[in-house]
Image (cartoon, rainbow, N blue to C red; front, side, top):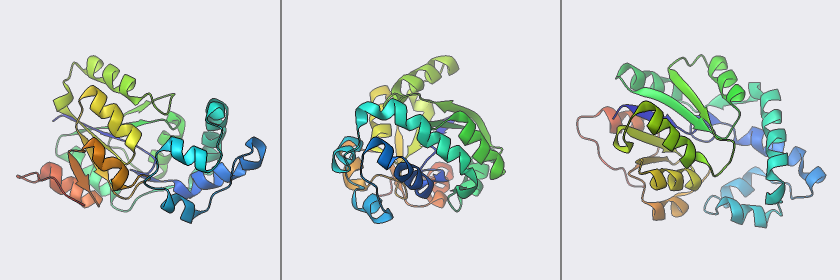
Length: 215
């Protein structure tokens, strides 16, 4: 394995509070329901479309709303941190020879701002998808550009849409339990690895014997 591709929000960045504030900031304008932190926890095993119906979010207006939410994110970047242990984990993986990539639907500028803010310099590329459900196309382009096979890549993320994209391309997936989606939603897509802490990522990928961690 040469490349480890990380999702950004919910995997590396603890950004749920800022996104919740952004969501609520535009709720009245676009006439969908506001949410509280307990709503996010309670809906971990619902997919995006189910959450959209529950909170009356107009998915057809997503191309209009999403840039506004990412703009709010940029304006409040100081409120966002990476999860505890993430920087050390990235440093260790990089020192072990892995190339670290980020792939996100968040804006590249936002990601690079947070990396500088957190003094993270181990990320070799930041890739973005202009569509929430378009990461498989980006992954295919990455493999072609690097002249790599899916077996040379591992994707680390927290959402069902990411593992579906990886399964489409054939890239193995590691699910992290501290993000947005719950295991009941993820398990049917059969992630190769399940981890509960950044330390477990290190132990799984650098340990002489890599084991699948069960929830």
